[in-house]
Image 1 (tube, rainbow, N blue to C red):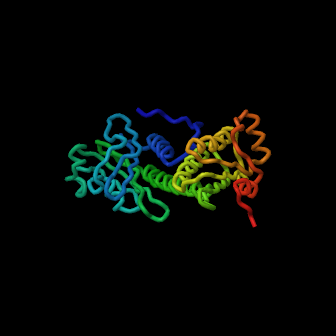
Image 2 (cartoon, helix red, strand yellow):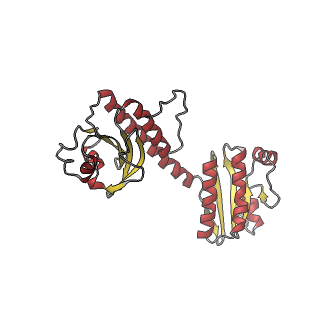
Image 3 (tube, helix red, strand yellow):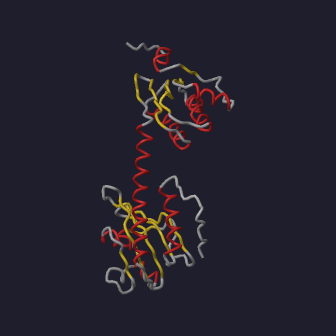
Length: 282
């Protein structure tokens, strides 16, 4: 049996997959089917992303089948409304499907999860070997959770775009580029910036990367440590790093946590950094 949720439990989540797990847990409290799952499709393959089985294992995470042979395809074709098939052995679209033969019969309920532009991501579904009925409130819950996950998809996409836009690597000359870091920085984004610095350094064949921190709004001790790792990591691949725009409050945090700064090169601003490597702004 599923464990009942603690109302005081923190329901915040970091990304779509974490949200998907929480959504299934909440739905399991109110919708009495054996299995709830979220599937993703690319038009060709239907893949189980997150699965919650209460007793019998009807579906496993990672299971795949051709999209036209999956019940989920019928939900997508049905449109944005909840699709309920009370008996998959009797329904004209499902009675001859291989998945029905394997299941032996039962009830299927689903609704698509779409992006804002209408493109389909996948489906949120319920499955049971017995015949189940659903109340208006339970059907409404499917609609609400689909809308919630659609919203989370958009947030995920926006965050990924911000990661790219707010930390671009700009080439200024052969072998030299600038990485301006802008906005709020958390640990996940700090690690993403380090990865980008490495990738772009190889791609652009850099000899020197100037990392400008003057656009950072908020930052904590852990993130300071992560960002200051950029210099060490770049040095391992033969790229010199100059850090500019280190505000007094960030400098104090670095000192307070005893960060090892002896091998790092700091300049007051971008102009000073460019002058150091032989450029003059006119």
